Length: 385
Image (cartoon, rainbow, N blue to C red; front, side, top):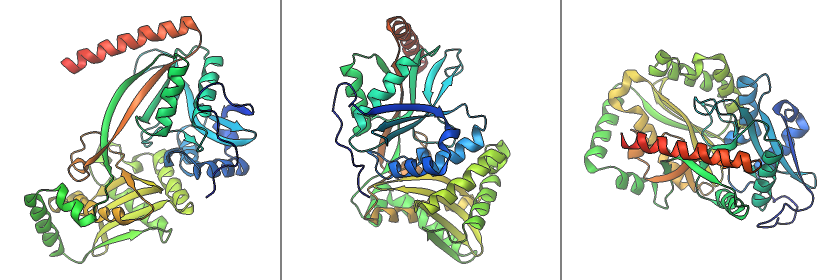
C-alpha cells in the first residue's frame, strides 16, 4: 500500500503548518467514513499495532466503554489522518487518587503504540503534547502504557521530549518474549530447547497420538469462523480461567469483543488461527493477528484434561512455521514477562514500558516531578524487599 501523500514532517521543532488535533468521544469515530480513514492509516503506519486498529479498538470500545468516556486523539495533516491514540482522563493512578491523562488500555489490549503514518512521528508527538498542555484540566501528567521502548516512534518521542526540555520518566519496564530469527523453524526449535526437552515433547506427542488422530490446522481465512470462535471460547472457559472468572466467555463484554475482533481481523486479512485436534475435538487453539512486518500472538487455550501431553507447547512447535513467512519478520508474544511456557521456546525479547510525561505549566510540571520522585522511591523500596 502506498504511503500517505504528504511531505515528510520536520524532524524536530514546531508542528508543520496544516497540522490539526481533534479529540472527541470515540462514538464520533464509529462512522463509515471515519472507520475508512482509520483503516487507511493502519496500513501506512511506522509501527503496527492491531490493538489500536479500527477493527479491534472499536469493538473493544463498544463492549467496554458504551458511555463514551474514552476519546480518540486524532492528528491530521491538511485533512489527512496521520495519527490516532485512544485516551481518557483518569481520576486514579494505580490505586492512588492522582488525576492524569492516559492512553486507554484494557485487559485484552497488549500494546499501547499509537498508529502514526510514516514520516509523521515527530509531528504526532508534538501535536499530542501540545494538546495535553492546553487541555490538562485537573490532570497532573500524561501516562503512556504498554509502549515499546525502542523503534522509530519511541525514538521520535524521546527526541521531542528532550528538545522541549520536558521532564519524563519510565515508571515500569519489562521484557517479554518475541520471535525474531532468520533460522528455519526446525533449527530454531532445536536451538531453543535442550535435547532432553525435545525428547520429552516427542514422547508426549506420541502418547497423544495413541488416543486418536492428531492433526494441526492453520487457517488464514474466515472459513467456519463462527464455529471456531465458539469452540475457542468454550475451551478457554473449561479450564482454570473459567473457574477464576477471567475467561473471555465469563463476561458478555469480553466474549462480544472476541467475536467482533476476530471477524474484523479476518475481514482485514489479518487473522491467523492454529488448532491442534484430537479426532473431532480441539485440544489447543491459538489466535494471532498478522500486521506485517510483525505478528501478535493474541490468545491461546488448551484442554486441561490433556495437560500431561503439553498440547499448548505442541501447538507452539507448529507455530514456529511463521518464521518461514516472507511478510513476517517477528512475532510479539503479548505475554507477561517471564512467562513459564513461551519464554522457554521464544528466545528474543521486546522491551515494553510505562512512561509518564510532564504537561501544562511550571507549577504542574514541578508537582509531577515530586510525584515521580515519590514513585521512584517507592519502587526502590519494593525492589529491595
